Length: 131
Image 1 (cartoon, helix red, strand yellow):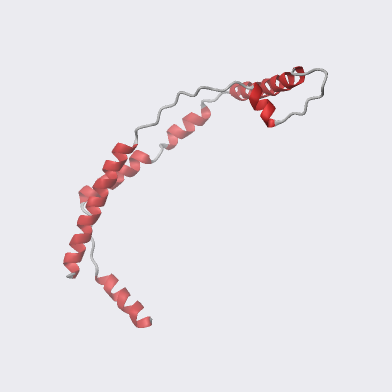
Image 2 (spheres, rainbow, N blue to C red):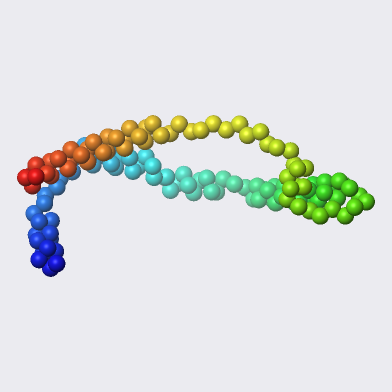
């Protein structure tokens, strides 16, 4: 095993790989495109006023009170056991109107371009090695 490890180390030391400026520029541009700007992240977190937290707390309290009132008013003579099925039956369904984001096409094109560059580099390395 030591002979194989030594041989692999010697072979690895003889491999010379160069990345073209074009590939290096494209990789850097891709990384800049997906890395969030630190200033933008800090701006987003600092934009929420203190009133936002109070409003969300009051909304939660109001929703809890509404559920309690609905459950208690459903049948005043018989004690009502609160179950998730009864709560979900009293809450109206929300009609979500959502659309899927179409962000995969540019990412797929960039992935294809990078795979093509890697394949070309691999072919150059194989040609240099003599495979």
